[in-house]
Amino acid sequence: MNIRRIGAAGVALTTLAALGGCALNGAGGAESESTASASGDVTGEVTLQTWALKPNFTEYVEGVIAGFEEQYPGTEVTWLDQPGDGYSEKVLSQAAAGELPDVTNLPPDFALSLAREDLLSDVTTLDDTLEDTYVPGALAAYQYAGIEGTFGFPWYLTTDLNYWNTEMFEAAGLDPASPPTTLDELVEQARTMQDETGEYLMSRKPGLGDFAAAGLPVLSDDGTEFTFNTPEAAELLDVYRDAYADGLMPDDVLADAYLGNSQLFTEGRVAWSTGGGNFINSVLENNPSLEGSITSSPYIGETPLYVQGLSVSNQSENLPTAVALAQFVTNAANQEAFAAEVPGVFPSTASSQENPELAESDGTPQGEAKAIAFSNLTTARVLQPVEVNEAMTTIVNQQFAAAIAGDKTSQEALDTAVEECNQLLADQ
Image 1 (cartoon, rainbow, N blue to C red):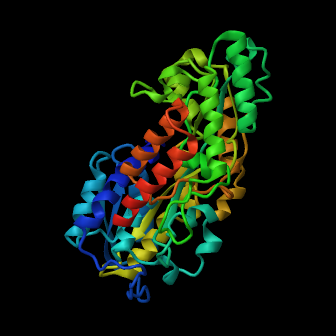
Image 2: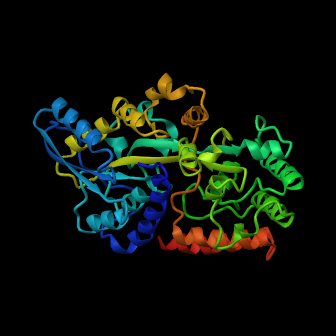
Image 3: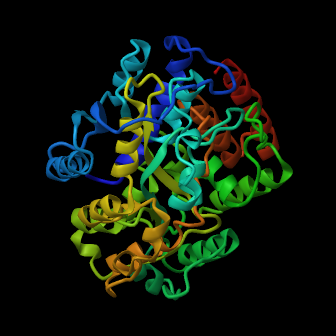
Protein backbone atom coordinates (compact mmCIF):
# COMPACT_ATOMS: atom_id res chain seq x y z
CA MET A 1 0.00 0.00 0.00
CA ASN A 2 1.18 3.47 -0.77
CA ILE A 3 0.57 5.91 2.05
CA ARG A 4 -0.33 8.53 -0.57
CA ARG A 5 -3.66 6.71 -0.60
CA ILE A 6 -4.45 8.72 2.51
CA GLY A 7 -4.31 11.86 0.43
CA ALA A 8 -6.38 10.26 -2.29
CA ALA A 9 -8.86 9.21 0.33
CA GLY A 10 -9.39 12.79 1.26
CA VAL A 11 -10.43 13.68 -2.26
CA ALA A 12 -12.72 10.71 -2.64
CA LEU A 13 -14.36 11.19 0.70
CA THR A 14 -14.79 14.88 0.21
CA THR A 15 -16.86 13.96 -2.82
CA LEU A 16 -18.92 11.67 -0.67
CA ALA A 17 -19.36 14.37 1.92
CA ALA A 18 -20.82 16.60 -0.77
CA LEU A 19 -23.25 13.89 -1.73
CA GLY A 20 -24.07 12.76 1.76
CA GLY A 21 -26.40 15.57 2.71
CA CYS A 22 -28.88 14.73 0.00
CA ALA A 23 -28.47 10.99 -0.28
CA LEU A 24 -28.47 9.75 3.28
CA ASN A 25 -31.66 9.26 5.19
CA GLY A 26 -30.37 9.26 8.76
CA ALA A 27 -31.80 11.25 11.60
CA GLY A 28 -29.37 14.16 11.20
CA GLY A 29 -29.13 16.88 13.81
CA ALA A 30 -26.31 18.63 15.62
CA GLU A 31 -25.86 16.05 18.36
CA SER A 32 -25.51 12.32 18.19
CA GLU A 33 -28.50 10.54 19.61
CA SER A 34 -26.88 7.14 19.79
CA THR A 35 -28.34 5.16 22.63
CA ALA A 36 -26.78 1.80 21.84
CA SER A 37 -24.87 0.10 24.62
CA ALA A 38 -21.53 -1.67 24.39
CA SER A 39 -22.19 -3.62 27.56
CA GLY A 40 -22.65 -7.34 27.17
CA ASP A 41 -20.64 -10.37 26.12
CA VAL A 42 -18.14 -10.14 23.30
CA THR A 43 -19.37 -12.95 21.14
CA GLY A 44 -21.21 -13.64 17.91
CA GLU A 45 -20.79 -12.34 14.37
CA VAL A 46 -19.60 -8.91 13.21
CA THR A 47 -18.42 -7.40 9.93
CA LEU A 48 -15.19 -5.47 9.36
CA GLN A 49 -14.78 -3.34 6.24
CA THR A 50 -11.36 -2.14 5.10
CA TRP A 51 -10.24 -0.08 2.14
CA ALA A 52 -8.05 -1.68 -0.50
CA LEU A 53 -5.93 -3.85 1.79
CA LYS A 54 -6.29 -6.95 -0.39
CA PRO A 55 -4.16 -8.56 -1.67
CA ASN A 56 -1.05 -6.84 -0.31
CA PHE A 57 -2.10 -7.11 3.32
CA THR A 58 -4.41 -10.09 3.28
CA GLU A 59 -2.12 -12.14 5.51
CA TYR A 60 -1.80 -9.30 8.03
CA VAL A 61 -5.55 -8.62 8.31
CA GLU A 62 -6.43 -12.31 8.46
CA GLY A 63 -3.85 -12.70 11.23
CA VAL A 64 -5.40 -9.85 13.23
CA ILE A 65 -8.87 -11.34 12.80
CA ALA A 66 -7.62 -14.77 13.87
CA GLY A 67 -6.06 -13.20 16.95
CA PHE A 68 -9.33 -11.50 17.82
CA GLU A 69 -11.36 -14.66 17.43
CA GLU A 70 -8.84 -16.51 19.59
CA GLN A 71 -8.96 -13.87 22.32
CA TYR A 72 -12.76 -13.83 22.23
CA PRO A 73 -14.02 -17.40 21.71
CA GLY A 74 -17.40 -17.52 20.09
CA THR A 75 -16.78 -14.52 17.84
CA GLU A 76 -16.75 -14.66 14.05
CA VAL A 77 -15.53 -11.77 11.91
CA THR A 78 -16.56 -11.39 8.29
CA TRP A 79 -13.98 -9.29 6.48
CA LEU A 80 -15.12 -7.06 3.62
CA ASP A 81 -12.41 -5.28 1.65
CA GLN A 82 -13.50 -2.70 -0.90
CA PRO A 83 -11.44 -1.58 -3.92
CA GLY A 84 -9.68 1.78 -3.73
CA ASP A 85 -11.70 3.30 -6.55
CA GLY A 86 -15.30 4.05 -5.76
CA TYR A 87 -14.97 3.41 -2.04
CA SER A 88 -16.78 6.60 -1.13
CA GLU A 89 -19.73 5.73 -3.34
CA LYS A 90 -19.79 2.22 -1.93
CA VAL A 91 -19.97 3.39 1.68
CA LEU A 92 -22.54 6.02 0.74
CA SER A 93 -24.77 3.37 -0.77
CA GLN A 94 -24.31 1.16 2.28
CA ALA A 95 -25.27 4.03 4.57
CA ALA A 96 -28.29 5.00 2.51
CA ALA A 97 -29.48 1.38 2.54
CA GLY A 98 -28.94 0.98 6.27
CA GLU A 99 -26.29 -1.64 5.59
CA LEU A 100 -23.15 -0.15 7.10
CA PRO A 101 -20.78 -2.86 8.33
CA ASP A 102 -20.38 -3.07 12.10
CA VAL A 103 -16.84 -1.66 11.86
CA THR A 104 -15.73 0.44 8.88
CA ASN A 105 -12.45 2.06 7.90
CA LEU A 106 -13.28 5.76 7.49
CA PRO A 107 -10.94 8.76 7.33
CA PRO A 108 -12.19 11.76 9.33
CA ASP A 109 -13.79 13.70 6.46
CA PHE A 110 -15.93 10.77 5.45
CA ALA A 111 -16.87 9.92 9.01
CA LEU A 112 -18.14 13.50 9.35
CA SER A 113 -20.83 12.90 6.74
CA LEU A 114 -22.08 9.83 8.59
CA ALA A 115 -21.78 11.44 12.02
CA ARG A 116 -24.00 14.28 10.84
CA GLU A 117 -26.61 11.69 9.96
CA ASP A 118 -26.27 10.01 13.37
CA LEU A 119 -25.09 6.78 11.79
CA LEU A 120 -21.90 6.34 13.82
CA SER A 121 -21.39 5.54 17.48
CA ASP A 122 -19.90 8.19 19.74
CA VAL A 123 -16.96 6.13 20.96
CA THR A 124 -16.46 8.35 24.01
CA THR A 125 -19.58 6.71 25.41
CA LEU A 126 -18.14 3.27 24.73
CA ASP A 127 -14.51 3.58 25.83
CA ASP A 128 -13.34 5.78 28.70
CA THR A 129 -9.64 5.17 27.97
CA LEU A 130 -9.48 6.94 24.61
CA GLU A 131 -7.41 9.91 25.74
CA ASP A 132 -4.85 7.62 27.33
CA THR A 133 -4.75 5.23 24.39
CA TYR A 134 -4.40 7.44 21.30
CA VAL A 135 -2.32 10.51 20.41
CA PRO A 136 -4.32 13.76 20.78
CA GLY A 137 -4.32 14.88 17.15
CA ALA A 138 -5.60 11.55 15.89
CA LEU A 139 -8.43 11.46 18.39
CA ALA A 140 -9.33 15.08 17.70
CA ALA A 141 -9.63 14.22 14.00
CA TYR A 142 -12.88 12.41 14.79
CA GLN A 143 -14.33 15.26 16.87
CA TYR A 144 -16.34 17.75 14.80
CA ALA A 145 -17.38 21.33 15.35
CA GLY A 146 -21.05 21.49 16.28
CA ILE A 147 -21.39 17.74 16.89
CA GLU A 148 -20.84 16.31 20.34
CA GLY A 149 -18.79 13.14 20.46
CA THR A 150 -15.89 11.25 18.89
CA PHE A 151 -16.73 9.10 15.91
CA GLY A 152 -13.80 6.81 15.27
CA PHE A 153 -10.98 4.84 16.84
CA PRO A 154 -7.77 6.26 15.31
CA TRP A 155 -5.85 3.72 13.28
CA TYR A 156 -2.73 4.39 11.23
CA LEU A 157 -1.19 7.82 10.71
CA THR A 158 1.40 9.77 8.82
CA THR A 159 2.70 13.33 8.89
CA ASP A 160 4.38 15.59 6.38
CA LEU A 161 7.94 16.89 6.41
CA ASN A 162 10.21 18.81 4.06
CA TYR A 163 12.45 17.23 1.41
CA TRP A 164 15.33 19.15 -0.16
CA ASN A 165 17.52 18.49 -3.20
CA THR A 166 21.03 18.86 -1.78
CA GLU A 167 22.72 18.99 -5.19
CA MET A 168 20.62 21.99 -6.22
CA PHE A 169 21.31 23.67 -2.89
CA GLU A 170 25.06 23.27 -3.25
CA ALA A 171 25.03 24.48 -6.85
CA ALA A 172 23.39 27.68 -5.61
CA GLY A 173 25.91 28.12 -2.81
CA LEU A 174 23.29 27.23 -0.18
CA ASP A 175 23.92 24.91 2.75
CA PRO A 176 21.58 21.89 2.57
CA ALA A 177 22.32 21.27 6.23
CA SER A 178 20.57 24.57 7.02
CA PRO A 179 17.39 24.53 4.95
CA PRO A 180 14.63 27.13 5.48
CA THR A 181 12.66 26.92 8.70
CA THR A 182 10.27 29.81 8.01
CA LEU A 183 8.38 31.14 5.00
CA ASP A 184 10.62 34.21 4.90
CA GLU A 185 13.73 32.01 4.82
CA LEU A 186 12.14 29.91 2.09
CA VAL A 187 11.62 32.95 -0.10
CA GLU A 188 15.10 34.26 0.66
CA GLN A 189 16.79 31.00 -0.32
CA ALA A 190 14.50 30.65 -3.35
CA ARG A 191 15.74 34.03 -4.51
CA THR A 192 19.36 32.99 -4.04
CA MET A 193 18.82 29.78 -5.98
CA GLN A 194 17.09 31.61 -8.81
CA ASP A 195 19.80 34.28 -8.95
CA GLU A 196 22.70 31.81 -8.83
CA THR A 197 21.45 28.94 -10.97
CA GLY A 198 18.12 29.91 -12.52
CA GLU A 199 16.52 26.93 -10.75
CA TYR A 200 13.44 26.87 -8.54
CA LEU A 201 13.13 26.13 -4.85
CA MET A 202 9.43 27.03 -4.45
CA SER A 203 6.86 25.43 -6.73
CA ARG A 204 3.40 25.57 -5.21
CA LYS A 205 0.79 28.06 -4.11
CA PRO A 206 -0.56 27.89 -0.55
CA GLY A 207 -3.82 26.33 0.61
CA LEU A 208 -5.96 26.49 3.71
CA GLY A 209 -3.60 24.06 5.43
CA ASP A 210 -0.84 26.66 5.13
CA PHE A 211 -3.00 29.14 7.03
CA ALA A 212 -3.60 26.60 9.79
CA ALA A 213 0.09 25.65 9.86
CA ALA A 214 0.87 29.33 10.40
CA GLY A 215 -1.56 29.49 13.31
CA LEU A 216 -4.21 31.49 11.41
CA PRO A 217 -7.95 30.80 11.85
CA VAL A 218 -9.76 28.95 9.09
CA LEU A 219 -13.13 27.84 10.52
CA SER A 220 -15.17 29.16 13.43
CA ASP A 221 -15.20 27.07 16.59
CA ASP A 222 -18.81 26.06 16.05
CA GLY A 223 -18.11 25.05 12.46
CA THR A 224 -20.75 27.34 10.98
CA GLU A 225 -18.57 29.71 8.98
CA PHE A 226 -15.13 30.08 7.44
CA THR A 227 -12.99 32.84 8.91
CA PHE A 228 -9.80 32.79 6.86
CA ASN A 229 -10.23 36.24 5.28
CA THR A 230 -8.02 37.92 7.85
CA PRO A 231 -5.34 40.57 7.25
CA GLU A 232 -2.73 38.05 8.43
CA ALA A 233 -3.86 35.55 5.80
CA ALA A 234 -3.72 38.29 3.17
CA GLU A 235 -0.14 39.03 4.21
CA LEU A 236 0.77 35.37 3.73
CA LEU A 237 -0.80 35.33 0.27
CA ASP A 238 1.09 38.52 -0.54
CA VAL A 239 4.37 36.72 0.16
CA TYR A 240 3.53 34.15 -2.52
CA ARG A 241 2.26 36.86 -4.88
CA ASP A 242 5.52 38.74 -4.62
CA ALA A 243 7.58 35.55 -5.01
CA TYR A 244 5.64 34.65 -8.14
CA ALA A 245 6.01 38.15 -9.57
CA ASP A 246 9.76 37.97 -8.96
CA GLY A 247 10.02 34.70 -10.90
CA LEU A 248 10.74 32.54 -7.88
CA MET A 249 8.15 29.95 -8.90
CA PRO A 250 7.53 28.24 -12.26
CA ASP A 251 5.02 30.03 -14.49
CA ASP A 252 2.71 27.02 -14.67
CA VAL A 253 2.27 26.81 -10.89
CA LEU A 254 -1.06 28.61 -11.40
CA ALA A 255 -2.04 26.75 -14.58
CA ASP A 256 -3.89 23.53 -15.27
CA ALA A 257 -0.64 22.08 -16.65
CA TYR A 258 0.94 22.28 -13.21
CA LEU A 259 2.29 18.87 -12.24
CA GLY A 260 2.50 19.48 -8.50
CA ASN A 261 5.58 20.12 -6.43
CA SER A 262 6.06 16.46 -5.51
CA GLN A 263 6.21 15.46 -9.19
CA LEU A 264 8.51 18.35 -10.05
CA PHE A 265 10.76 17.39 -7.12
CA THR A 266 10.81 13.78 -8.24
CA GLU A 267 11.87 14.88 -11.70
CA GLY A 268 14.69 16.97 -10.20
CA ARG A 269 13.19 20.20 -11.51
CA VAL A 270 12.65 21.91 -8.14
CA ALA A 271 14.59 21.69 -4.89
CA TRP A 272 11.75 21.46 -2.34
CA SER A 273 8.73 19.32 -1.71
CA THR A 274 6.71 18.17 1.24
CA GLY A 275 5.65 14.57 1.72
CA GLY A 276 5.08 11.78 4.19
CA GLY A 277 7.74 9.72 5.88
CA ASN A 278 7.91 7.29 2.98
CA PHE A 279 7.81 9.91 0.19
CA ILE A 280 11.56 9.61 -0.28
CA ASN A 281 11.15 5.93 -1.13
CA SER A 282 8.78 6.66 -3.99
CA VAL A 283 11.00 9.49 -5.23
CA LEU A 284 14.05 7.22 -5.44
CA GLU A 285 12.02 4.43 -6.97
CA ASN A 286 10.87 6.74 -9.76
CA ASN A 287 14.13 8.66 -10.14
CA PRO A 288 17.15 6.67 -8.89
CA SER A 289 19.47 9.46 -10.04
CA LEU A 290 18.46 11.40 -6.91
CA GLU A 291 20.06 8.79 -4.66
CA GLY A 292 22.33 10.63 -2.24
CA SER A 293 20.87 14.04 -3.16
CA ILE A 294 17.92 14.23 -0.78
CA THR A 295 17.81 15.44 2.79
CA SER A 296 14.82 16.17 5.02
CA SER A 297 13.74 18.49 7.83
CA PRO A 298 10.63 19.14 9.93
CA TYR A 299 7.60 20.78 8.33
CA ILE A 300 7.53 24.57 8.37
CA GLY A 301 4.95 25.62 10.97
CA GLU A 302 2.52 23.27 12.61
CA THR A 303 2.82 19.72 11.27
CA PRO A 304 -0.13 18.29 9.32
CA LEU A 305 -1.48 14.90 10.35
CA TYR A 306 -3.20 12.38 8.07
CA VAL A 307 -5.44 9.88 9.79
CA GLN A 308 -7.23 6.65 9.06
CA GLY A 309 -9.61 5.19 11.62
CA LEU A 310 -12.26 2.60 12.37
CA SER A 311 -15.80 3.79 13.03
CA VAL A 312 -18.56 1.72 14.60
CA SER A 313 -22.07 1.79 13.20
CA ASN A 314 -24.61 2.80 15.83
CA GLN A 315 -27.01 0.47 14.09
CA SER A 316 -24.82 -2.53 14.84
CA GLU A 317 -26.79 -5.42 16.25
CA ASN A 318 -23.69 -6.63 18.10
CA LEU A 319 -22.19 -3.45 19.51
CA PRO A 320 -20.08 -5.06 22.29
CA THR A 321 -18.24 -7.22 19.78
CA ALA A 322 -17.98 -4.43 17.21
CA VAL A 323 -16.36 -2.10 19.75
CA ALA A 324 -14.03 -4.84 20.97
CA LEU A 325 -12.98 -5.54 17.39
CA ALA A 326 -12.24 -1.88 16.64
CA GLN A 327 -10.22 -1.63 19.85
CA PHE A 328 -8.35 -4.83 19.04
CA VAL A 329 -7.41 -3.84 15.48
CA THR A 330 -6.19 -0.45 16.70
CA ASN A 331 -4.31 -1.65 19.76
CA ALA A 332 -0.60 -0.91 20.03
CA ALA A 333 0.65 -4.39 19.18
CA ASN A 334 -1.40 -4.73 16.03
CA GLN A 335 -0.67 -1.20 14.86
CA GLU A 336 3.06 -1.58 15.45
CA ALA A 337 3.00 -4.79 13.43
CA PHE A 338 1.23 -2.95 10.62
CA ALA A 339 3.76 -0.11 10.74
CA ALA A 340 6.53 -2.67 10.37
CA GLU A 341 4.95 -3.80 7.09
CA VAL A 342 4.29 -0.32 5.68
CA PRO A 343 7.22 2.14 5.81
CA GLY A 344 6.06 5.65 6.69
CA VAL A 345 2.87 4.51 8.40
CA PHE A 346 2.79 4.94 12.17
CA PRO A 347 0.58 3.75 15.03
CA SER A 348 -1.91 6.14 16.59
CA THR A 349 -1.41 4.56 20.01
CA ALA A 350 0.27 6.74 22.63
CA SER A 351 2.28 3.86 24.07
CA SER A 352 3.89 3.26 20.66
CA GLN A 353 5.50 6.70 20.67
CA GLU A 354 8.32 5.36 22.86
CA ASN A 355 9.03 2.40 20.58
CA PRO A 356 12.72 2.79 19.58
CA GLU A 357 12.25 0.77 16.41
CA LEU A 358 9.84 3.45 15.21
CA ALA A 359 11.52 6.51 16.72
CA GLU A 360 15.16 5.96 15.80
CA SER A 361 16.86 6.51 12.45
CA ASP A 362 19.24 3.99 10.93
CA GLY A 363 21.31 6.88 9.60
CA THR A 364 20.13 6.66 6.01
CA PRO A 365 18.16 9.51 4.38
CA GLN A 366 15.13 7.22 4.44
CA GLY A 367 15.65 6.54 8.12
CA GLU A 368 16.10 10.22 8.91
CA ALA A 369 12.85 11.07 7.12
CA LYS A 370 10.99 8.35 8.99
CA ALA A 371 12.34 9.56 12.32
CA ILE A 372 11.34 13.17 11.61
CA ALA A 373 7.85 12.13 10.55
CA PHE A 374 7.46 9.97 13.65
CA SER A 375 8.79 12.60 16.05
CA ASN A 376 5.90 14.96 15.38
CA LEU A 377 3.02 12.53 15.83
CA THR A 378 2.16 13.65 19.33
CA THR A 379 1.79 17.31 18.34
CA ALA A 380 0.60 17.08 14.73
CA ARG A 381 -3.05 17.65 13.86
CA VAL A 382 -5.34 17.67 10.86
CA LEU A 383 -4.83 21.18 9.52
CA GLN A 384 -7.46 21.66 6.83
CA PRO A 385 -10.97 21.44 8.30
CA VAL A 386 -12.72 18.26 7.24
CA GLU A 387 -15.74 20.40 6.36
CA VAL A 388 -13.86 21.56 3.25
CA ASN A 389 -15.21 19.64 0.28
CA GLU A 390 -14.06 19.41 -3.32
CA ALA A 391 -16.18 22.36 -4.49
CA MET A 392 -14.77 24.57 -1.73
CA THR A 393 -11.24 23.50 -2.61
CA THR A 394 -11.86 24.56 -6.20
CA ILE A 395 -13.07 27.98 -5.06
CA VAL A 396 -10.06 28.45 -2.79
CA ASN A 397 -7.62 27.39 -5.50
CA GLN A 398 -9.18 29.75 -8.05
CA GLN A 399 -9.22 32.73 -5.72
CA PHE A 400 -5.71 32.13 -4.40
CA ALA A 401 -4.42 31.79 -7.97
CA ALA A 402 -6.07 35.09 -8.89
CA ALA A 403 -4.40 36.79 -5.93
CA ILE A 404 -0.96 35.36 -6.65
CA ALA A 405 -1.27 36.26 -10.32
CA GLY A 406 -2.07 39.82 -9.29
CA ASP A 407 -5.54 39.81 -10.83
CA LYS A 408 -7.06 40.96 -7.55
CA THR A 409 -5.78 41.84 -4.10
CA SER A 410 -5.22 39.07 -1.61
CA GLN A 411 -7.90 40.49 0.67
CA GLU A 412 -10.42 40.60 -2.20
CA ALA A 413 -9.62 36.99 -3.08
CA LEU A 414 -9.99 35.86 0.52
CA ASP A 415 -13.27 37.71 0.98
CA THR A 416 -14.69 36.10 -2.17
CA ALA A 417 -13.49 32.64 -1.17
CA VAL A 418 -14.96 32.93 2.32
CA GLU A 419 -18.30 34.20 1.02
CA GLU A 420 -18.66 31.41 -1.57
CA CYS A 421 -17.40 28.66 0.75
CA ASN A 422 -19.79 29.79 3.48
CA GLN A 423 -22.67 29.48 1.03
CA LEU A 424 -21.66 25.88 0.35
CA LEU A 425 -21.10 25.19 4.05
CA ALA A 426 -24.62 26.37 4.85
CA ASP A 427 -25.98 23.78 2.41
CA GLN A 428 -24.15 20.85 4.02
